[in-house]
Amino acid sequence: MKIFVCVKQVPESSNVAVDENGVLIRDGVESKMNPYDLYALETALKLKEQLGAEVTVITMGPPQAESVIKEAYMMGVDHGYILSDRKFAGADVLATSYTLSQGIKSIGDPDLIICGKQTTDGDTAQVGPAIAEYLNMPHVAWVTKILEVDNKSITVEMDMADTVEIVKMQYPCLITVEKGIFQPRLPSYRKKLATKDKKVVMKTFTDFFDQQPNRYGLSGSPTQVERIFNPESNGEKVIWEGTGEELSNQMFTKLKELKFI
Image (cartoon, rainbow, N blue to C red; front, side):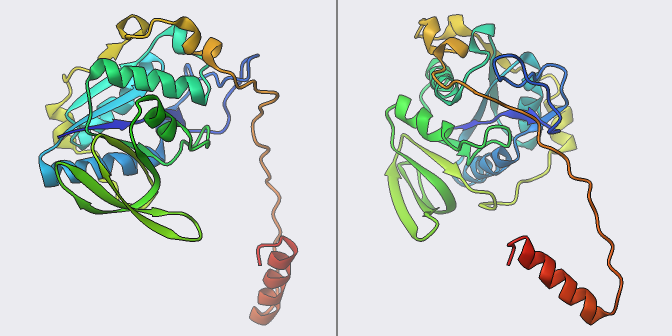
């Protein structure tokens, strides 16, 4: 059984510059693995232990994104690929999903693709389902539990906000997982030493079957960003003094004023 996990490198800070096209300037910015992708990785590794599956991670980004592949190796992943080409730069959700789908096609045919629910820099939660559409495979989003799994199918529980649904799918298929499906393991120092020379394969535009430049990057992105900006930081603070009853009343009043209760 072959499992692919899509991961992404995201900025560690909200203080990131933006270019004239409304695209985040990622070069030279301290980055980390998207937190939601850690849950996708852990799900894949749990299935690897249960079924003897082979786990491959794939990411799209500049060469520095190789660090998230190395981190995945330290967690127990078998293979890693990075899709990196100037033609992929500036991609929106549609172009990103298409690039990842073509990258997956160029690597092989997975039985199961696992994605995190969303990324912390885009928050669209659309890339996973869009990859499945491009690959013409069934998919389920918002997965909170793996109920049953074998070498032919997977049964999952999905959170639909007002209801919970149980879905069984035959392979090949794709799922996006919620935070908390499993507790992500920490990278292993022993695996770090064992995989320090493990190769990360880089694929570029020329490796893809589809050689239409207008499907990738900024030219393949129909979304036009009108305005993007860093969030304002609010350092305002208030210190209250009084008895326990007075402080609790003040807290209640403030929370009500802010519409938290």
